[in-house]
Every structure is written in structure tokens, then in C-alpha cells.
Length: 392
Ligand code: PMP
Image 1: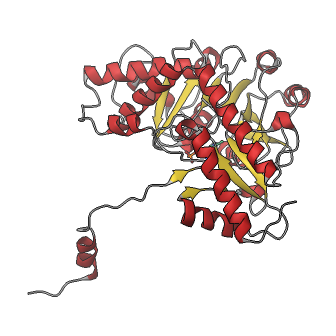
Image 2 (image 1 turned 90 degrees about the horizontal axis):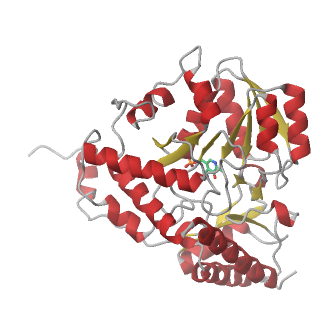
């Protein structure tokens, strides 16, 4: 017969059944999905415009209101990961020439500044060193000085492990200055308190694969009334069809009628419905307490090993993504490789400004448990010992 080509051999390789090793994902995300969430994804497909599927979408919207602590009816899931949520918010809430103040203390502010520029906004960057956050006073001063259309903040800067405080009159100051308050909660929502309405947040987005214990692929977001006013009052169409929130909002029933924009991610929405149900069963306060406890347990163990946090101030430390200083003489990559080889646990290195300087340990969703923390600590203990570490 005819001789086999390389592409035919590729198909033969797929005859071996799919093999996926079991890993404990303790990096900055994805974290392990809850078994109930994975089971929900295996349910039969429905059409993306079927009434029963719309009912599931409505229930997701209700669950998101709880999660974001907002009474705004304008919640939905973007089909995509956190970046898609980020780009949706930036592309829809800014018109060309609008000014945005981006609080940049890590790679997420960096990327939002880049993105906003691509949508032809005027970008003003406030900068803070890696591991530091912005004071309300300095944010208020920036609002007064620049009179922007929007202020962007990252609640959980996963590249540095910094937690940005959001209360303290910041929302009111944005309102007074005519600026929308936009917040990235990808690495924090569900793990630390977030009070959308009480804090006067106008728009926030998150990701499915962190504290919600679902696979990557959904970016929940909400818009408050001022953000909706901005969206509906635009003089120009957003320069993205795929992420146009007027059109996606129509699909999710924001404006009364429902119309097709894209094929909703049927199985992914089942996963989100289940993830939100699990969050509702546990309750936000219990979730926040469980994440805090895991963080305290982790640091008790790390400090006993002689390790130190990268973020100096207690109040600035993010509990969901922990950054740990790599001590002098220790090879950080050898430790993460040792942890994977011996404990099947993922511990990550740094990213952007922290590359080579820290390890990052995520305590998110189903992984924020005493048992997972003990595995991480055992991996650090053994990995450091393998490098001859005697402690600080
Ligand atoms: N923002 C933050 C704070 C994140 O931690 C991440 C993911 N690491 C993102 C945005 C981007 O999300 P994704 O990788 O799901 O696109």
C-alpha cells in the first residue's frame, strides 16, 4: 500500500488512550477543580438558545451577584479566560481618547495599560514597586490630578503577592471625580472579601480557575449602573466584535430580549453553575475564613523552615497567592522540579518583576485546605534539604 506520511503517524500516536497524571496544583492557577464541577461538565449538551439553558444562565447570573456582592442585574460570564474579561471591560468602558489611570504594581497593571493603549485610550500609569500597594490618599490625588474616565486596580496582584485595599472611600472618590472604578479580581474573588456595591466598584472581572475551583475558560464579570450607562451611551462601537458587551449582554438577557451573539460554552456554564452552587453552600464568609486559615498555616510552616515573605507589610500580603523569597544560594527551579518529581505538587517560580526572586504558592478554592498546605510544606522541607539548606 501507499507509504505512511508523518501526519499519518501522528494519528497513530493518538490511539494510545489519553493519560493525565494527577497533580496537586498549588501554583498561582489553575488550581484543582472540585470533583462536582468536573462531573457537571460531563452532562449532556443543550442548545445554547434553549429555554432550559437560558434558565441555567439566569441561575449563574444570580450566583455571580452573590459572589461579587452586588445587586446589579448586569452579570455574565465571558467565554474565555481572565484576559478575555480584562479585555472586555477595557474595550467596552473606554472610548478612544478617554483617559484611564492604571495602578501598576505588577504584570496585570502592565497588561491593562498595554490593552487600553491598543483601544486608543489615553493611559496614565501610577507605579508602585513590586510587593507594594497604593494608598487611598495617592489614588485620590491621582483622580484629582488626571480627572480620568476610569481608575484600574488589581485586588490580588498574583505576580507579586500584593493585596490592594479597596474600601476606605475610594469608590465615593471615583464617583465624585466622574471616574469608573474597575477592579481585577481574577486571583482573589472568593478567597478574600470583595464587596462590589458597598465599595462602589463599577466593574470587576474574575476567572473560573482560581478560587472558584472550576477549569479555566470562563471570565465572570459584573457592571454596575454607572458602567452600564457608559456602555449604553457610547458614541462609538467597541473595537471588538467578539467582546462587545452590548451584544454579549443581549445573549445573557441584560436588555430584555435575547439574541445570538456566539455559541455559549455549554459545558463550561454547567461547570460555573456547579462552582457557584458550591460557593453558595459553603458561604462567602466561610470561604474567606478557610483561605485565611490556610494562609496562616502555610506561613507558620514556612517561617519554621526559615523562609520569609516577599511582601513586607502584613496588610499588603495576598492570602490566595503567596510569594516566598528565594534565599541566597538556593536554586528555585531545582526546588520546584523536586516538588513535582517527589510530591506531584506544583509550586511556581516568580513572574515579571518577581521572576527568579520568589516562589509562588496558591491557596485557592478546593486547594485551600490544611492537607494541601501540609503537602506544600513537606515539599519545601525536602526540597531545601536536598540543596543542603540549614535554615536562616
Ligand atoms: N489577572 C490576574 C490577577 C491573574 O492572576 C491572572 C491569571 N494568572 C489574569 C489576570 C489572567 O487570567 P488568565 O490567565 O485566566 O487569562
